[in-house]
Amino acid sequence: METFKKLKSFYWPYKRYFLWSLFFVLFITTITVVYPIVLQLTIDEVVLKGQYQYIPWIVGGFLSLMVVKGGSAFFHQYLGDMFGIQSVYRLRNALYEKLQRLPFMYYDNAKTGDLMSRLTADVEGFRFFLSFGFSELVRFLLLVCGTLTVMFIYSVPLTLVTIAALPFLAVAVYHFDKRVHPAFRNIRESFGKLNTNVQENISGIQTVKALSREDFEIGKFNQANGDYKAKSLTTSFVWAKFFPLMELIGNICVVALLAYGSVLVIRDNLKPGELVAFFSLVWYLMMPIMHLGFVINLFSQSKASGERLLEILEADESIRDMERLAPVTQLNGNVTFNHVSLRYKDEDELALNKISFEVSSGKTIGLIGATGSGKTSLTQLLTRFYTPTSGQILIDGREIKDYSLKTLRSNIGVVLQESFLFSSTIKANICYGRPDASMETIIEAAKRAQAHDFIMELPNDYDTMLGERGLGLSGGQKQRIAIARAICMDPSILILDDSTSAVDMTTEFNIQKALKEVMKGRTTFIIAHRISSLKHADEILVLENGLIMERGKHDELIRNDGYYKRIYDIQYKDQKAVLQSTVG
Image 1 (cartoon, helix red, strand yellow):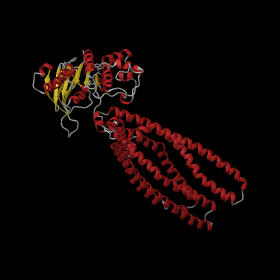
Image 2 (cartoon, helix red, strand yellow):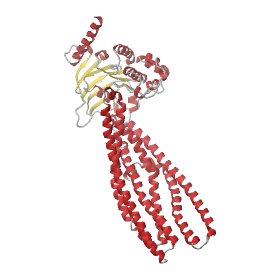
Image 3 (cartoon, one colour):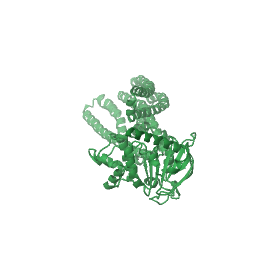
Image 4 (cartoon, helix red, strand yellow):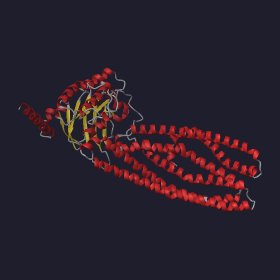
C-alpha cells in the first residue's frame, strides 16, 4: 500500500465521491443478503404451510428490492467513476507539469514511447482500480461479514463446515498476488518498450524508407511485440492456474454443505428453506472470495502502474528556481564564464573543461570546432538546460541561478540546429515565445528571417496549418521560421546554433544581413561550421575536446596556423573552385 500512500494527495480530496459510493454499496450488500432470507421465508412459511395469499406481497417486495438495488448500483457506479476520473485528472496534470519541469538530463535517458505509455495506459490502469477496485474490496468485506452473520443465525455447525474451506482459499489468493504483481510490472515495462518502438519508427519513417529498412523495422517490432506477448502469456498462465484451483475449493465446500445439510434436514435440525437459503449464502461467500483474485489482479496492475508513475513524480528536479531570486525581468546581456566545466555523467569525460571568457552586452561571440567539441554544451549551460559541474556563469554580474528560469529563458532567444515546429499555424509558431506579439511584430520578425516571402505564397499565408514537426516545409523554411520565432521574442541574448545550415548560400547571406540589424544591442552567440557565418564576430572561440584552443577576431585567427586557419583554407578553396567552374 506504500504506492497508494504516496499518491494519496491526488485521490483523497475527492473522498466524498468514494464515501457516497460506499454508502450505496451498503444498500446493495444489505439487499443481496436479504434475498436468501426472503427466499427461506417464502419456502418455509408460505409454500410449505400453504399461505399462498402472501405470494403477491412477496413478489411486490422482491420488485421493490430490485428497484432499490438497481438505483443504488447506478449511483455506486457513477460516483465510483467520478472518484477515479477526478483523481487521475489531477494526477495526469501533475505528471505533465512534472515533465515540463524536468531537466534535459532526464530526457537524455528517457524514451518517448515509454513516457507516453505511462501517461496513458498506466494512468488508466490506476484509475480503474480507484473507480472499481477500492469499492469492490469494501463490498467484499461487507458481503462476507453479512453472509457469515446470517449463516451463523441459521446453523452454527453448517457455517463451520462452510468456513473450513476459507483458509485454503486465502492461501491460494496470497500466492496468486505474489505471482501476479511482478508479472504485471513486466507487462507494463514491455508495453512501454513497444510504444517506444512504434514512436521511433513513425518519427523516422523517411529514414527507414530511404534506406529500405522496412523489413528490419518489422523484425524489430515483431521482437518487441513477441516479448509483450510472452509476458502476457506468462500472466495468463498464472491466472489459468489459480482460478480453477479457487473454484475447485469452493465447489468442494458446496458438496460438503449439501451432504451435511441434507443430514440436518432429515434429522429436523434444519428447515428445507433454510438449507436453500444456505446454498445461496454459500455462493455469496464463495464468489466474492474467488472474485477477490480479480480484485487483487486489479490491485497488482494499479500498483505496478502507480510505481511507474511515481518514478516520474519523484524524479529529481536538479534545475529549479532558488528561494531568493533577483527581482529582475529584463537582462542587459553581460555574460561571464568563470572556469566552467561540465560532465554529463559521472563516468563520462568532461564535455567542457575550465572555460573562461567574458562578453559585454551587444557583442557577438562566434563558436567553432569539430563535432563534440562542446559548442552546444556551452550555450545550453547559459540557458540552464544543464548545470555546470564546477565554475560560475554570470549574467550582468549575478550568477544565473539567482534569476528565475522564466526570467532567464524569456531573455534568451535560442535557434537550434534541428528546428522543431508545432502542429499549429505559422503565426502561432512564430509568436510561441511571445504570445501577446502583434501581427506587425510577427511579420517584421518573419521578414528579418527571410521567411515572409515564402509564407505569403502558402494557401493561408500566416494562418497556414503545419503538419507534425513542420511537415510540408523544407529544412531551410523551417529554420527560417525558427529564426523568426527567436527574433519575435526580442531577447537580450541571442543564440544561433548552426541556424543557417539548411539554407543555400544566397539565403544565408540575406539572413546574415538581416540578423546584423537584429543583433545590434544584443549579446549574440553564433555556433557555425561556415566561416562566413561568424567571421564578423567580435571574438571567435575555437573549441576542441571541451577546451578553448584558439580565440580572437577573424583576421587574427587566419594569421595563425591552427584549426580555424585550416577550416578557412578548405572553405575558401571550395568557394574559389565553385566560382572558377561557374566562370569557366
